[in-house]
Image (cartoon, rainbow, N blue to C red; front, side):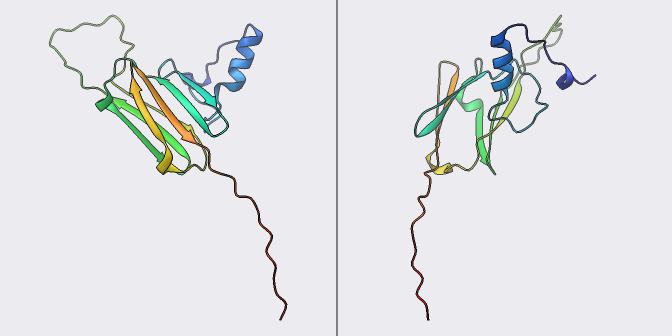
Length: 139
């Protein structure tokens, strides 16, 4: 059975609310539950702020791209594979990626910084155009 079909049973009101808002900024309904790249999303009057846990990665390992309203964060670290390594369980991935739907934003004004294992991305909201009246002359 595919892992994206497995869902946890919400047991509290907070779990229900968490599930309801868990896919905010997410493009798909059947998104896999992730235990990596945990993200907090804040909304201010002028922007959205994403705070993403990226512990164990260096700044040089990170990549951010924006295409057609989808913001993709990727990270890949080089692993040294020593001979005779035996793992009973391996949960840390050397390559991760996550995509968020952010809509139509001005890509030139997005700012990102990485500090203490947390990637912060500030996405300014696109200014709403105020419709102006236009008079049309009659010939």
